[in-house]
Length: 171
View 1 (cartoon, rainbow, N blue to C red):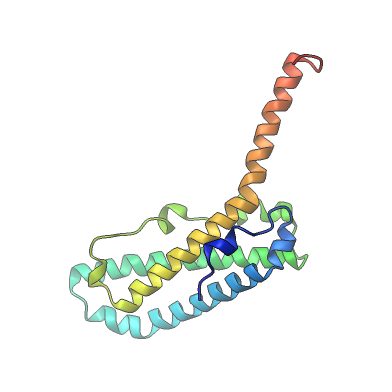
View 2: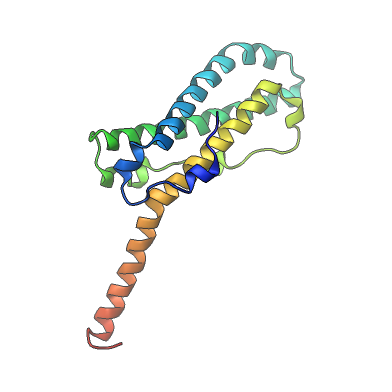
């Protein structure tokens, strides 16, 4: 199951705790954790067997792309768990908005190969597509929940400096 982009547009942006208690968050959390489990089962079982039968070039691609799907899902799961901790009062919003807890590894997770994917097992290709979709949705959430506040604070700081430089009465 995936969550439609139209649902993403209706997310509450003012209250992070409220978002983490929303039905959209619950569905995203459940989807993410289920995808982590499904991927782990595949990579430790059938995927391992399938990778042994691949030609050398495809085996190298398999190794790289299986690491990419794992990285995406670990980043997504970590982010989801942090938001749940905020909702449950186990972590402050200030801590959660710090760089340490933001969605990471974007250079790896947004990357991907277009050529040669047809050499990979169908199940891995499906997991790559689904993990990419999940990661991109969480990246949008991360930007919406935390990016706007960060950008807004920076802009406000510039306005404050300008106001101090030119004085309160100028404008």
